[in-house]
Image (cartoon, rainbow, N blue to C red; front, side, top):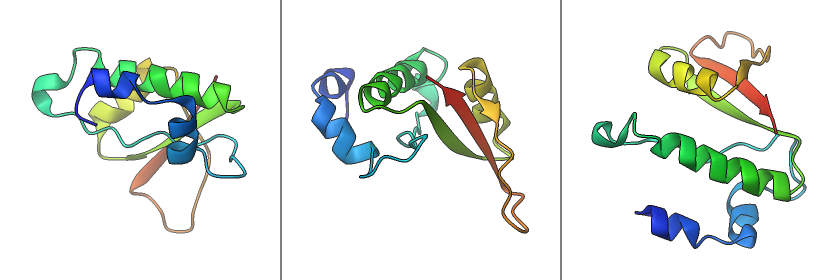
Length: 104
C-alpha cells in the first residue's frame, strides 16, 4: 500500500486475513511500520497504529504487541508514547529485541 487513501480502502476482512491468523492470538502482532525519514514525526505512524487498533478490536483482540530492535531507541520512544509497555517475555540468550504490549 502506497497511500493513506489505499489504506482507507482496506476492509475489515482484509485486516483479518493480513494480520489476525486463525485462531487469533491474544494479542495479535501489528503490521511492520517502516516510514521513510521525511514522513516520520508527522503522525503517519500513529495513524497506521490507530487503524490497526480498530481492526484488531473488531476482530476481538484484547490488546496488541510489537517486537522492536532494542537498539532502536526512537521506535521504543514512539511505542512508549502510544501507551505500549515492556512485556517480560524472555527467550534464552535473546537481548537484541524488546517486546512491548498495549491493551485495547
